[in-house]
Amino acid sequence: MQLKTVRNPILSINKTKETYHIAFFCCLYKMGPDTIDKLRELREPCRINNYPVNSQNIKYETDIVMTFRLSGNDCYAGSIFQLKGRNKQMKKAVVLHSGGLDSTTLLHYAKSEGYEVYAVSFEYGQRHDKELDIAKKAAQLAGVKDHKLVTLNLNAWGGSALTDSDIDVPDYNPNEDSIPVTYVPARNMVFLSIAASYAEVIGAQDIFIGVSEVDYSGYVDCRESFIKAMEAAINQGTVAAVENNKPFKIHAPFQYMTKSEEIILGTKLGVDYANTWSCYNGEDEACGTCDSCKLRLKAFEDSGIKDPVKYKHL
Ligand SMILES: [Zn+2]
Image (cartoon, rainbow, N blue to C red):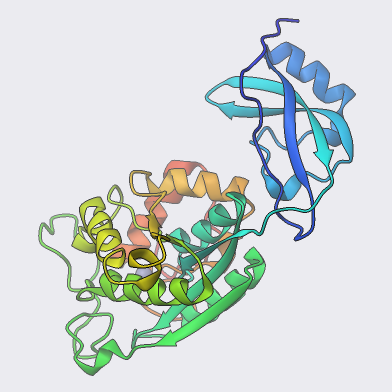
């Protein structure tokens, strides 16, 4: 057995209970795949799907050996100790949530990072309510602490195929090199501003948004430069940041991830993708032809995971 001690082996602080549970690993060893297999046989009840253990799935009392994969192909084994004691208050996070693939993965991601999640969704005059119904259920499934629904009526001035019934949602056009008409003017700026207001009131300093600038439609408010600028603005425009030395951080963990990588991550985190909605049209079945459907379909195909959502056209 080839064993190597890993420095700083504390991996996880369990914050799922308000009163206690600080769990950590010690005696962490790097091991070859054959040894890992043997260990799995011996310690079957302790195996957690080869995936980094997070705060939610440590439930053992003491000194249990388990195997998991940290990154790449490196496998490790470690012991878990669980110390019972009064835990610090969980950190709160406001998570922007639309019921789509990205933001539903994000809810689970924020939870896996040990946050108490406060989801916020917007009824902004979009073409259909379907994604909001799905957002409510997704928030429940993810076990969020609270879920706010904010009404904005951006359809008062329209300006997007998603908020203006006079503008049709176009089918995906691979030759399109300008921003599609499905862009909702300044949407993420509006959403992040409201998330900051909510965060300031509940005492959260962390705001999560599921933007990516890898698989996207070129929307300018998904870029990292915008996210950083918004973070700076929020830290200039809130009492918590300016007067009380509690600055905000906007987390965009999927910024440089492909959608297929998100799907693989979300599947490991237990996301039920059957209860996510990406289609710009709100019919019983996803259209399969709009920009958003096309991006989603390609992402599932690349991930090797079957998309459980039904499509009208494939
Ligand atoms: Zn569609």
